[in-house]
Length: 325
Image (tube, rainbow, N blue to C red; front, side, top):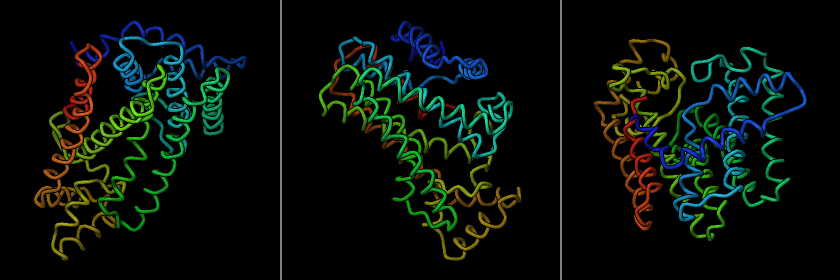
């Protein structure tokens, strides 16, 4: 059985019902909108976010979920999908999960409006049910995601990102949404504040480990078999590169910065950058940091009694680290 199916096993019924509720939460009187949202729903990814919501809710709520849990998961997916639709417009991207993006099929104006529609649907789903506590969790996440993106753009121009700033960027950009899913799961079943905060922290740790793993893919992995160097081409400052910059001679540092800034389209030069990052311990360092976050996340689960939900969450933490793509 595939690892993702194993993780999903204890919440299979909930996920099936969630699919129906999520699809219903998007409906509109405008047939064009329904056509587009139907397209979105049928091209979903692994659905890690709602899985976090349900697994955390069941682990902290003695195996119980309620209508608030379903709404919380739907709000997260609606608002997350809205940000993806807008991202594709911003990045001028024609593909999303191997399919055409909305802006590729229906052009930018419609894509932006669809993103706005999904955002408002998410907000209203919470407001109409007085789920203001759940709405606050996701609203904070969206604010942080926007700040993280802008902080990255601001810093990327100068290539002067310190490790501290890097972790702040990925905390906001990537980890904050997974943290919101985990907080949402606990909050939906009325867990006490300190438990909600503990689960938020759990999600943040996993999200950080997830992003470092993504950084490492740029330097090659067994699945692809060769380095991609895409982050270098896009002048993204990743953890292996930051470590290599901070641990190289002034000559090497100059050469690295010049390569990333001015020669990032030169395949041979990108290859040389990858080799230098490896030589200077960038990959080993990133792997050790990723494992630190993994261990901290697993420690937060230790206080919970054994259950299929806890087991799935442990699998999820390890999957984040061991995945091949």
